[in-house]
Image 1 (cartoon, helix red, strand yellow):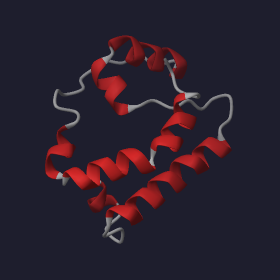
Image 2 (image 1 turned 180 degrees about the vertical axis):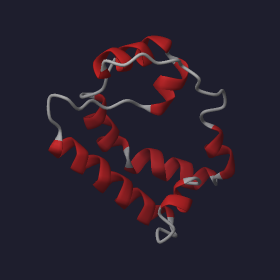
Image 3 (image 1 turned 90 degrees about the vertical axis):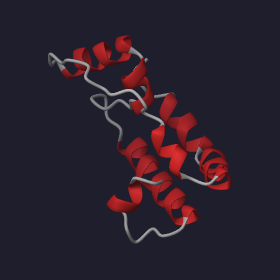
Length: 102
């Protein structure tokens, strides 16, 4: 939410952000073809095997240069906002995880 305010400046409140985030990601799920997979940023940053599988899926050579502190955006949010984001995006994450690269 913290960094997305720059991307979606019209989404002033956390509720608006959650609605838009769910809409965008559920739309991607509906449009999913056999050449589309979902990758959670945290898994790319922390699990080298996931990065390798993504590169293989995309048929590219890559070097994992993800930085540490991938969850640092949470440090700038209120605890209530974090809890609401996690609660209100749970179902979308569940649907996305079923289609992710493992």
